[in-house]
Amino acid sequence: MPKLSYVRALNRALGDEMERDPAVFVLGEDIREALTNTTTGLLERFGPDRVVETPLSEQGFTNFATGAALAGLRPVVEYQIPFLLLLVYEQIANQANKFALMSGGQTCVPVTYLLPAAGWRPAWGAQHSDQPYSLFAHYGVKTVLPATPADAYGLVTTAIRDDDPVVVFAPIGAHGVREDVGAGALSPVPLGVSRVHREGRDVTLLAVGHLVHDALAVAEDLAGEVSVEVLDPRTLYPFDWEGLEASLKKTGRLGGAALRRAVQHLPARRRQDRGPGDPGRRLRPAHHRDPGR
Image 1: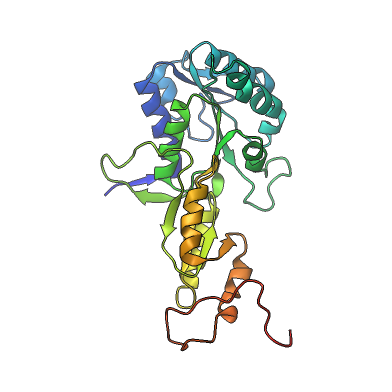
Image 2 (image 1 turned 90 degrees about the horizontal axis):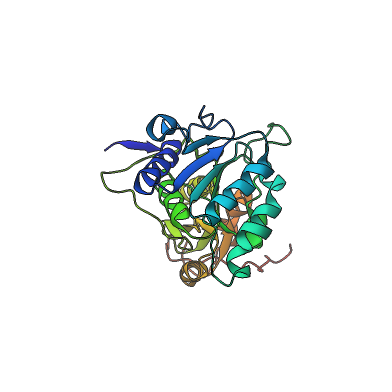
């Protein structure tokens, strides 16, 4: 079975959607050079009218994309650095995202904003190490953070087809991920639907983006002590609250992927009311403190 890389999945999603819908086009800085490899080969396939090289003016081409969407096109804007979204936050969150509301649903702005998310790596330049997805999610902009190649393909496809602006953060920490993908296995992934990467009984570990893989590593490390369920919301807005509720009904507890050290202490808080070899033992409540502590 062939392996698909994360970046190749992004590239394939763009190419497939441009093939399917002539209204889809890509614009941004250095995209004809494919610096991130996301747009590799698109210029040769679709020509300069649909792979548009822009000047060094994020405010300019972001608003250009809004106008193109209002005129009936489906632009995909690629940014090279996540911090650049802060330069155009007002254009996306306050303008593009509100046109449908302000027009009473008479118009829509189907723009996809695609960028690498680089907040994971230490020692990067201070202005290159941002991952501001929470700003957009909290402001009600559709925001997705794929963790795997299949989800990257599926969520980008859905974002392009969506009639609202969608911000897609592609974490660099996941760019090296490859997975087996069979023929016909790639398909759109609906927004607002989470994915359980690993079933568990004792605690739900909620993780997004490249941290999903950290969470899976933690779950494997603790497999002999704690049964960890790894839940990936995939979409931060809209959020799959029903999926989270279903997971918590099974486990009764919620953890975060960044809390590796905290999770490693979980075995010390297990109940003592069952035998040490009983796999059905449950964790103590989070507020429990051992006597004398």
